[in-house]
Image (cartoon, rainbow, N blue to C red; front, side, top):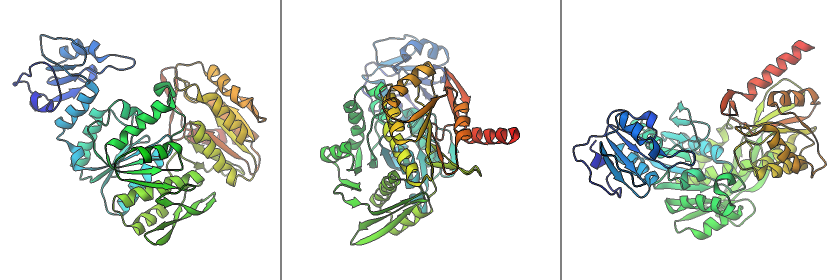
Length: 483
């Protein structure tokens, strides 16, 4: 493709060499091949401008910069924002695949993965060919691809869209993170629907304030055809009041277009009624917890906005299975229960402990930590939440990354000490899990919070294999041998 075609509609200073042919786009100099356009992205840890010379040596034939830098050996053009330019160039390069898909977005602090998975199930039940982009994995129909982050960088995103179009996908359901909105990873996409789940404290290491966090999420609702918003959430009410596109609201406690009624919650799932089109429809979802009512309602309302018949949507929810790492029961053949959940925010932790309380016959034992190099403000808050709601806690490591694990734990303890909960500190997560299992009694429920679907731990800069399901099986085998 000609460079002029790749840069179509992208504002730039400099003269395009009409003879330059582009075979690839890269923003990482290690991925440059002969014929590449190299886009210099200013990151928070590294600056792509520093790697332009290396990219040219590797075969880049054109460079797009944000800062005033000139390279005489190749065509060099300057643009006001290379992040936006990267998204536009990727869309041009891949033939605007986003325009050939119905793109369905879900954003919010908690619930994105479950809601997107449920919407995918409903759309497939309705006969659509569906792609999924999210935290756990990217999927093209039934083909699973690994996911490095919740929302891919724009270049990988548009490439993924192009693969989906090639595979006959008609709808793509994707988690849209606040980072991706602020960093323009989804720039240039017009979403068919955008669903808001909730907004609670998280990512303040990046956004600094809740207002900034909200404003990042809010950006999504300027580029969607229809909004689906949880108005039980205070930020959801702000969105519903602020936006100009058509908006459909849902909730349990507030006045809403779709309201869940007659909630019945058990260890096997939730049942609730939804009045719609002069009828009342019973909805069943086999995932426990009040938050599952919100997730099921969000998926149902989004599907109706996409013209799925209500009976098909409800039948699909009835058959839907839970998402790995979200309120996932690990079967152990013991007289106690073990639940794995991804909860890594104060609100998420409160929701899952509250859910476990609803069906635990004995004590709720919560094993959890907090991630390193991430928002430290939430650590004592999570300690207070866990201590207030649990019968016993084991504070341990999550993904400490480059922070000292015991430093993180001490911050969690600040909140834990404000409660009357007994607790133990065991830095090693495997040993912490074993301690909980050894001390569990009949009817107890052990909640392993924070890792969820993750099959690794990041200690320092090393990513080590750590699948809690495997850890539980290994501990049970060891305990059996030791008897």
